Length: 452
Image 1 (cartoon, rainbow, N blue to C red):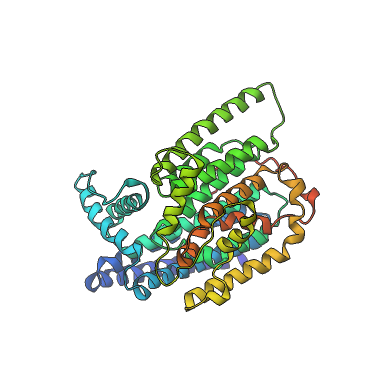
Image 2 (cartoon, helix red, strand yellow):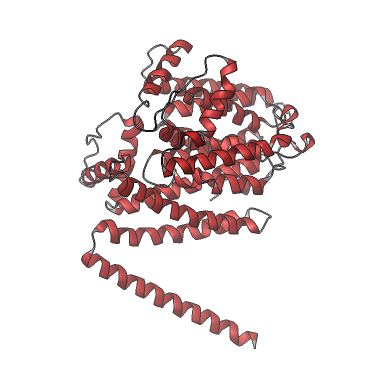
């Protein structure tokens, strides 16, 4: 009986698949007759993204011993799709198309036309670093797929999702004894991480780049090979949009590499490898600091000039209904208040609209999670040097809080902090005992590659 039933089931599935594809193809052809390419182009590209994602999700699920992880990952992927719709509605219904995405879409369509004609020096409107890069990237995407803002939202959100997955992989490589399920739930399902990196814009691209950089850093700091590609690609990806964030990331990786305990057993080549590593760090630090200084319009790199640039940038955020009086970090005593402001605001008493209410609710959730995780954080004293990735997260979070504590707009602050939350969440998923923070285990060559 089973030998005859299985082929029938397979045949039925095959026939059903052909019917579904045929009906969907007919629907797309019908839609192409009355709808704009904005709509029917997305009906072609989005299913292709789903087809590409299916084996990637399956492979990611197989990497974890816990069979529930694949279910979590698929659920997060589905919620990311819903968040993409919400992000679009927010930009074009709530803000009536005045969001940055509208500008990226319009400029991307213009640039795509030039790129198709072989004109690659078309005017991008601003400097390449920052907004200009997102415009160029959108133009390249539109040159391939055709101009459709729905396609752009789907592709950028897709990149943001895989950035979150890379962050999870970084945690698994660097913290094999950490609470992986808790970290997965936090980094994949926290509302801010679902919502903000889910559309055409800098947040999705930065999340992708930060995820790659974190994964490469975890490999490097845990003594594994093949860290160069993800770390370099991640730093370049973030550097072409927000060089100051890249500089903070690089400084954190450098501090962890130089101060953390080496994970590989020493050999005759260890001194040479160490010297090469230090040289690369010095070179990378020079490049990242130079780019960040140029981005912030700092001619002479010094603490006072950097402070002045941060203050000037912060003053530009003091506009709109979400503005508030921000107090930066002027001494170590200011840091706890600044950390609470950057990570948890808006507070409940600052709420004046529904969007801010949701952000305040998440802030309360984070405060509760921090309080519940305090017993885990007692393990930090013995774990920071033993596990350099923790040191990297701590340094990066500190630099980010210092730089963004001057920002005086709750809306901007809520959106920007998705760049630091994944590193803060690491400390909420620590092992319960200090002995559990052990050097990372060796992983196979396959696992050291890019996990997609």
